[in-house]
Length: 130
Image 1 (tube, rainbow, N blue to C red):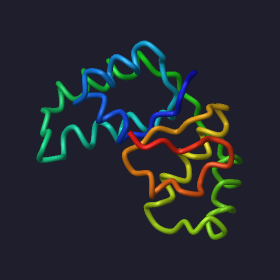
Image 2 (tube, rainbow, N blue to C red; image 1 turned 180 degrees about the vertical axis):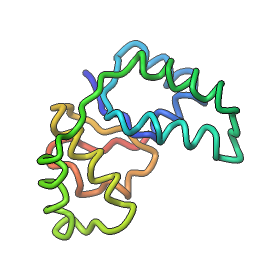
Image 3 (cartoon, helix red, strand yellow; image 1 turned 60 degrees about the horizontal axis):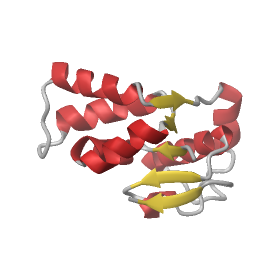
């Protein structure tokens, strides 16, 4: 079964070989924006602090095990129109768009390290804490 991987789940897969093997075996789904989120964390997080060339290489390797489901402008606007009802403000909008992409992809699970950020956001996918 394919699952949707948010950026925190992909970063964890960089650090956890068993999780990385799972991603490679099952393949995963995410949206293209996630690649820039992963790169940002790999180069900006003091606990990781990869140089840009290595971070790009790691991001490319992750991308090889992913399918991408992106939202059209109309789908983004539709998700934004649900923001108030779902309690979304500020940067939490990125989680809302991940949830919308997961639902669009038709996956049953959205994998994350930030379960509270996703509570109540997907209409169909179940949020799974790694």
